[in-house]
Image 1 (cartoon, rainbow, N blue to C red):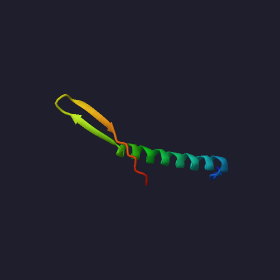
Image 2 (image 1 turned 90 degrees about the vertical axis):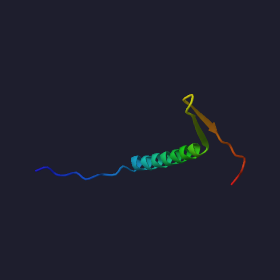
Image 3 (image 1 turned 180 degrees about the vertical axis):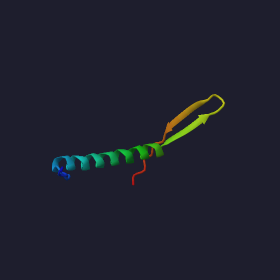
Length: 60
């Protein structure tokens, strides 16, 4: 009969996974923020897509 081996956590890998998840989360936030600051206009007559970066000097 085979003995089932349970999961044995490796603290180093677990910490690395947490850091990776945090970095991925921050990158996704930046992407969303970047998308919010980009105006996209499509000229249907000429079938051209224009992207305009919106910049602001306001500080929060």
